[in-house]
Amino acid sequence: MLKMVIFTFILAITLSILFIPETDVDYSDPADKIPQVSTVQIERAEQLRLDSERLFDRVQEQHDRQAVYNLSRTYTFSDFNLLTPSGLSAESLDELTKNTELSGLGKAYMEAERETGINALFLLALSIHESEWGRSRFARERNNIFGFQAFTHNPANAAYFDSKEESIMKVARHLKDNYLTPDGEHFDGYTVRDVNRAYAADPGWSNSITRIMGRLSDRLEEEFSM
Image (cartoon, rainbow, N blue to C red):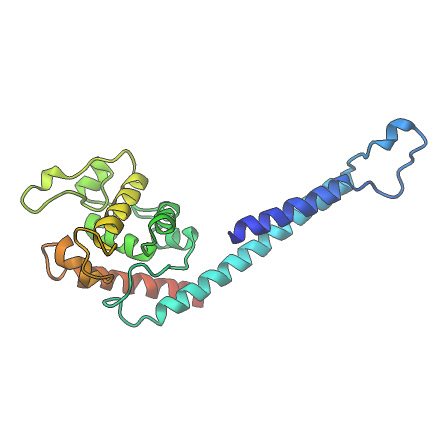
């Protein structure tokens, strides 16, 4: 939403620069009555675009700083409501996964959060835990970065996906519909511990996820404190 507002502002100002004729244009020739776009006007528009992009980057960075601060105030993720918006950007998530097999998926995690309401940091932590940072066999061979449908009694049943992005959205929708909606089949509350009861056979699964969330939050805090 913020990006759209700034883009609209840039477009409006740019058009106004391009189509307002300069005062020293000679209109003695009827053909000159059609406003001409001068080199100076084009340069002004380009400079405005660059200045606006820098402004957007500063606003986005400040937004991410505030989001990280809010996350850092969550001293434990054990009782964290998973439908709490992360407030992060795709770029921040990409920074966390840089040089890993999960790199470049920040946009997909954020799109999943926007559609389902499930916190993107949790989705990232879940995929890190289930796929060993995207290095698992299912992640490599099936784009399945959550071990989705790899049941304890039949792990070979793990689902195939055309892309890791598809895997993220599928699992987010599955969690929302079945675990994080009051009339969902496995709904037992909104925290990681609540989801753990029916989602994973390992009772320590929720602790593993919350530890990863904590480490990711710490890394973001370090990044924005530099």
